[in-house]
Length: 373
Image (cartoon, rainbow, N blue to C red; front, side, top):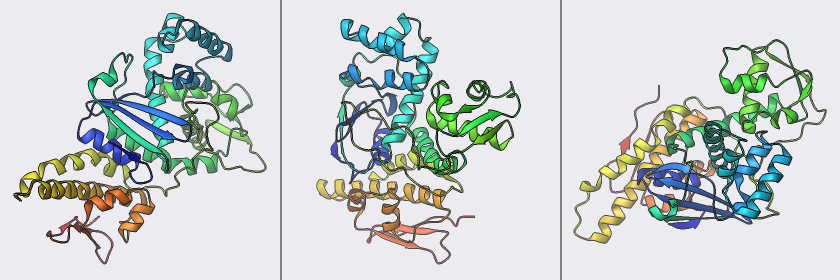
């Protein structure tokens, strides 16, 4: 499985991997940037390409968010060059991290990398299947694709709000009151780092959390009165979450972030994403055409339509309504030209009140959605 990201979006690729419970690696390339995800029976288990140890995203991430001081990172790079040991083994061997801290960092890193590549609209993808792709892979996480997609959509939706409230690392904050010790470990960890007046940029370098998480925690603390904003930059530049480090030096410019309105029910829609896609695999008995080619084509078309039905629900969850046409779905990056081509022939009809739709092949009986309440 390989192709162009302009035709087949990452969300669609991940859905197929989950539905078919694939094992192997997915390689995304854009210019000089290279990101690799590993899957075990449809679960995301790692995002570290072991073939490019000099550009291990784990080491860069740990340094950026404050797990490691710069001199510690330099020391580890030197040892890696001399011994070619895996950085995870070195981190544990040197007691820079505990195994629990390592696994948490690996989960945060994988989610952050998915989020960053979620908005790629150019580049290529290649899936290489087989158990051998996981050979030698240690310290694996276990992330469900539907949860990853849900979190990616939530972050894309929430980021504009966070940017409006806290427009960049130059914002100065201070504690208005001591943080509640009953807060979660992650929240308390961030808030307890604020010692007097502090720029958000300084906090990002010591919080041991992804950038999005820090901004989200701070925004909530401002709303509940635990943190106060002391100073904002006079000129507010547009900000984006930190871009992934390219697999080789000098990567291209950052991708533009998704900008979506606040959802009315995205969690419910995305929560059933993979379940809806799995249902497509149960419709094979509907096609009894003696031609194997025609049967396979009809099955593929119905699977594509089932994915479109799921993404129509995602659109409604994000925008509060169904799209007026499938062009709107494509413009929202929830349907690629290839997916629409696979689903053809296709008929999409929106009800007059916009609360339900019919989607079917031209020869099929339309399937209606219940009215949205």
